[in-house]
Image (cartoon, rainbow, N blue to C red; front, side, top):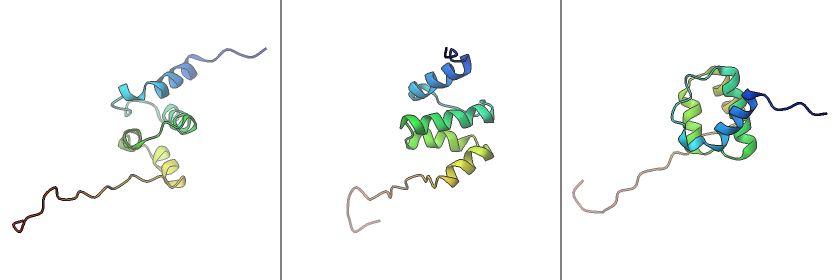
Length: 87
């Protein structure tokens, strides 16, 4: 018989589903944050906003996983909206 999921596992799954409501991850312990990051990747939910949340934590283990997977933020150049002779 299969064991029921733990409360932590259910909470992480819920966080992955409802990531749009999360604005800060800095209070989450590093081992839970790593599991959350890996499950976010597995679910295909990692986007630029979520990546910024993980990077903003400054946790070394998360930053090293991001670096080892060669994940980078997109740097979109800002183009002028109008062209005139005066700058």
